[in-house]
Image (cartoon, rainbow, N blue to C red; front, side):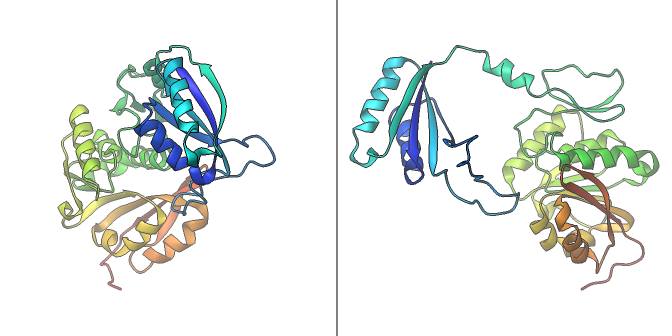
Length: 305
């Protein structure tokens, strides 16, 4: 295979990518900052939940992969001949050695230890511990693979609290289930009656498939599936939707039950606590890489704001 390397101004990046993929038969196209590792380098993406700072870099480097050199050369010739492509410049052609990309990709995702005796293990690995609680989940299936701090903290909390509280987890709600990893994690630690809901039908499908692959029984569906109150409510989303969902999530928490929230940056703790204060008092229960886990417990009847 051969890689075609181009330097493209910001306003032409989308058009060039469309031409390479849609008309010139590129196998793939990647975009990077042409000024990376220099004084001119600038960040493009903001924090989670924040708007993008731009659609491309001022000077973007495009790398397009082709089956062979003639295909790459033809593509470059046709592209640079377009009137609108006057500011697009050829940086080079480079042969790419054949590699086992599947094996390389898999090597980047080893088993993740959540806590002693609890692992998230991709399908191509054997469990590292005999008798350990294991979730079989492959990266890239949906949000939530055990590697992100928000997911890891939720799983860590479930594992730590299960010895004392799992007998009371006769109903569990995983709101915004993504891959279903939290619901499966709760099931692995003795919970039952698990409802996993998401606004994305693809996430519901993925959760159902992952539950089957892990031999876990749970109900999956859109948010209206969630009915009544639960001794344990889990929601790993982001701060903005968590704020909007405060009344609904609190209404689902049973008396004496726990509400576990993640997807929250440290600087957002006070705002989230204030949003939930009319119903449940939240505390920071864990922190990792700038993210926090907030947990509250309902006592008595819920007031309604």
